[in-house]
Image (cartoon, rainbow, N blue to C red; front, side):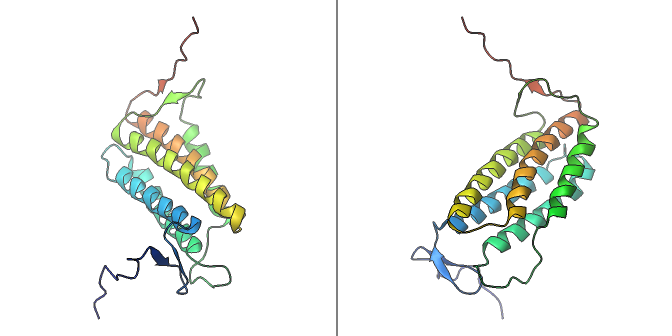
Length: 186
């Protein structure tokens, strides 16, 4: 049997969570995993850039899969069992280790930098901001329905990861970060 892309089930503003629970499309859970989906697409745009070093392409494919894990967890209503493993603290620690490794080759920051640089770096700065928005959505959801601490930690660390990746990509492409110079008060 061939599955159709459209089901018409959401035509009246509802969508389904795993386990056939119907909720409004503006439910906090749906907003949060909608932001995750947007973030995943931006990571995909980063991967498609020629300026992205090969070692990051491999990491980003893993991260895209991890974002699907988080999305699946958010689509699983409380009391329902998911058929996949969830993000764990070890995933957060791996991001921290990868951040530390990249930072070894970067010039330490002395002031804020402007988002940008080569194409892949610019996409990663966008990924960082969408990741922060996703994190804010998760916090809003968490005030109504508990979200596991590992998910909150993962998204928080992931935005840091994208920031360092953007700097790393610029460095690998011989493009200096552009410092933000605060205007002097006259």
